[in-house]
Length: 261
Image 1 (cartoon, helix red, strand yellow):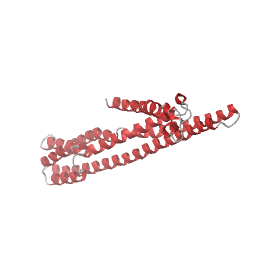
Image 2 (cartoon, helix red, strand yellow):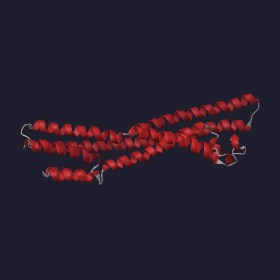
Image 3 (tube, helix red, strand yellow):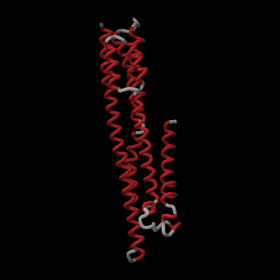
Image 4 (cartoon, helix red, strand yellow):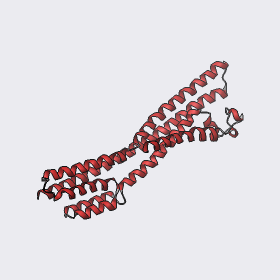
């Protein structure tokens, strides 16, 4: 279902970019001197001028919409992963209660906080409670079982934090390539117009050059937006995972001392 959602978002973004924005809005005949031919935009008409950049501009607009959509999605998901309160304060409270031996209170804090950090710690605490008084488990086995619960929880939470980052990195690469393709096509058309007429046709030459420049601009905007977002969220996720690892180390040390005392 999640992959289907991503496909729907990408498909709709491209439809909006190419059909709605590029063709119907920018390509509105009212934006051009020659109406339905859509080759001569009115002086100063920005929408019509961008439309002359060619259909690849529509795809680039779609890529920008895709990037923006997943930036909002990642922002929402990472904020949700933090839980209801400040994660740092939550971790300090949980560690303090575990050090005092108040395991149930620490578990209750996890239930209240929620989010990725709380889910991992709750899995560890719950499993430790289950095996702590089981005489069939040695001290090492109890810690191993707790660590196994942590690993399982991390395997569930980490992909949620990293989800859709690959889409941002892919859009960054594709936008650059499509922008370069549009630039190349625009320059080819400009020189073809010059070669076919034998004289400099200002209109045809400007159309080709504008196609090249607007595709370059669109590709750069899409690439820069996606690259900055990708690096920002990757740093956020790395910091989040590091915070979880520190918390796990502290909890494991506390449990190790508890079972061996």
